[in-house]
Image 1 (spheres, rainbow, N blue to C red):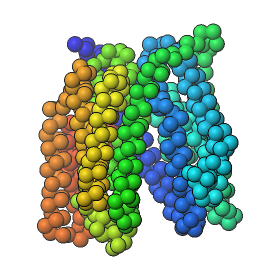
Image 2: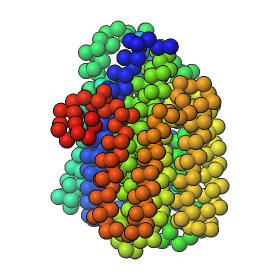
Image 3: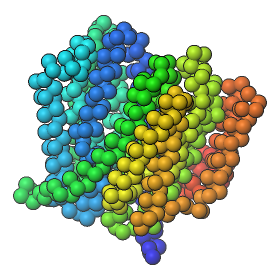
Image 4: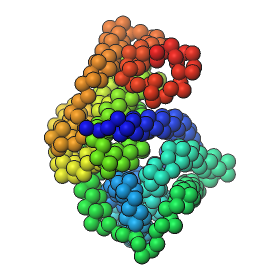
Length: 512
C-alpha cells in the first residue's frame, strides 16, 4: 500500500499534469484557429489544380514521416522518462542520439531515393508534373517533421508544457500563416509556399534544440555525460519501437480504407460527403490530443517508481477531465449536426449530417475512455498492443467492405465508428487482463459518466423532437455543459487541481 507521503506526491504530480495539459488545450484552440486561417487562405488563393498538387505532396509527407519514425514517436517518450527517473543519464542521451540518428539516416535515404528515381516515380506513380515538382521540394519535410516530432516529446519531458505551447501551437502555425501571406503578397506559387513550409519547420526544430540544450545545461545533465559513458540501448529501442508500427498501420487503415472503398464502389459525391465531415468529427479528439503530450512521461515516471495507484488515478482522472471538457464539442457535432453541416458546407451537404453524428460518437467514445493504448505502452504490454491492432485492422477492413459496398458514405461512417469502439474496448480489456495498475473502470466516477450520457440523450432527443433553432440549440449546449461541470465538480476535484480558479466569484459559485 502506498504511504501518505507517496499519495501526496502522486496527487501533486497529477495536479501539475492537469494544469499543464489545460495550458496545452488553450494553445491547441489557438492552433486550430491559425491552421484554419492557413487552410482557407491557401484554398482561396491557389487554383484548384495547384492546391490539389500541394495537398497531395503534404499527404505523402505525412505518411512518410510516420514511416521514418518507425514507431519511435511512441517508444522514445516512455523509455527516456524511465531512464531519467532512474538517473541513468548515459542511457537517456544514448537513446536520444540513437533515435535522432536513425531518423536522419532514414530521412536522407528517402529524399535521395525520390530524387534519384524521379523519372520512374513520374512515369508510374505521380504522372502530374506539378504534383511531382512540389513533392520533390516538400519531401525534405519528412525527416524534419520526424525530427520535430521526437524533439516535441523530449520537450514534454525536460522543458514542460510552456515550451510545447509556444513552439507547436503558436510559432508553428504562425510560421505557416506567414508563409501563405508572403506568397499571396508577392503573387507567388506553390513552389514558394513549399519552401516557406520547409524553412518554417527548420526554424521550429532549431527552437526545440536550443531550448533542450539550455535546459540540459541548467539541470547539469550534460556535464555528467561523457562520450565514453553513453550507452546505446539498441535492443530496447528496436524491441519497443518496431511492434508499435502496428498502431501506425492501424491508424492508416482507419483513415484510408474507407476513402479508397468509397471511390471504388460509389460516386465521388459519396467521397465528398464523408471527407467533408470527417475533420469536423475529429474535433472531438482536440482535448484528448492536448492532454496526450504529458501523459506518457508522467505515467512512465510513476511506473519506474512502481506507483501503481498513482497510475490508475492519473488514468481515470484524466479520462474524466477529457470526457467533460469534450462534451460541448460532442454535443454540437452530434446533436446539432444537421445545422452545423449546412452552415459549414451549404445545403448541398445536408445529407452528410447523419455521417457527422455517427463519426462524432465514435471519436467521443475514443476520447472519453482515455489513454488506454498509451497506458499499455507504459506498462510494456507490446504483445497485447500488436494483437489488438491486428484484430482492429482486420475488423476495419471487413466492416468497411461490407458496409460501404451497401450503404456508401453512411457505411463508411458506421465502419469507422465501430472500429474506434472495438479498438478501445480491446485496449481496455487488455489493461484489465494484463495485471496493469489501471482498473477496468473507476466505479467512483460512474455517476459522472451517467450524467454525461443522460445530458447527451436529452440534447439529442430535444433536437430531434422539437427541431429547435440553432441559437436555442447552442444555448441548450451551454446550459447542459454548465450543469455537467456543476454535477461532476467533486469527481473533477477542481478545488485541489485548480484552487486559484476559486478566486473568481462566478467560478467559486460553480465549483463550490
